[in-house]
Image (cartoon, rainbow, N blue to C red):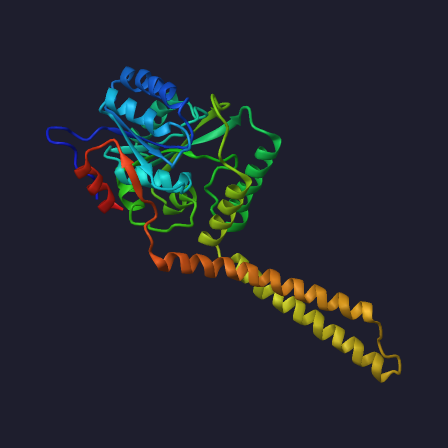
Length: 329
C-alpha cells in the first residue's frame, strides 16, 4: 500500500531513499547537495533515511535535518540488518511517484538524480545508474565486484545486470508497489529488482571516492551477498551436486572394475595410502555437497519462520505514521 500523505499535502514527485550506517559526517553534506540539485530543478521531493543501527550519532544528525526540513524523514532500526533490508524499509515508507535509492557516502553524486528522473519521465519504470568508473576503490574490491557480476550474469542467468555493477537506481511507483509484495529476507534486492522486469533502462556515471568515514561493507557481508544472490535465483548449485554425484559414482564403478580386473589376473591392488586418498577425497566431496544443500535448507527454514524483516526502534515522524509504516511491511 502507498502511505497516505499528511492532511493537505500532496505526494512528492521523487522519494530519495538512503540507508545510513555511521554516516554522521556525510548526511549534512548530502542534504545540501540534494537541496541544491532538486530545488534548483523545481522538483517536489522527500528524503527517507533509514539508520541501520549506527554506532555514532547518525540518527541525531537525521533528527536535526528533519527538524530543519519537513521533507526529511528518518527511522532507526532496532538492530543492524544490512543495507538491503534498510533500503527495503525506506522503500516501504516512500510516498513519491518514483523512488531513488541513493547511498549516504556521497560516492553516488546526487546531481545524477536529474538524469534518472528524465529517463523515468521518458517512459522507463526502472532506471539504473551504471558505473562507468569507480574512483578510490581498492583493486581487491574491484576484482570482487567483477567476479560477483560475472557470476550473476553468466551462472545465475540475470543477463540484464550491468557488467560493472549498479546499486544507484530509480523506480516507478508501480515497481515500488510490486516490490512491496516480496517478503524474502536473504536476497539481493538489486538482483530482485532486475529479475522483476518492467521497462528498464540505464545511464552511466562515475562512482566517486567516499567523502568521510570508511565502508561497513565487510568481506563477510560480501560473501553472504554472493551466496544469497545465487541461492535466491538459481538451482545450479543443486544441479551441480547431482552432476558431481553421478561423476563420482562413475569413477567409483571404474575403480571397482579396475580392482576386480587385477584380482582376476592375479595382481590384486594393494596399498593403504591409495585407499586413504580415496576415502578422504570422497568424504570431503560429500561434506562439500552437504554444505551447499545446507545453505538452501537454512534459507528455507529462515523464510518459514516469517519473522519481521526489520524492526523500527525510533523515528522522526509522528507515532501514527510510524504505525502505518509498520503495517505496510
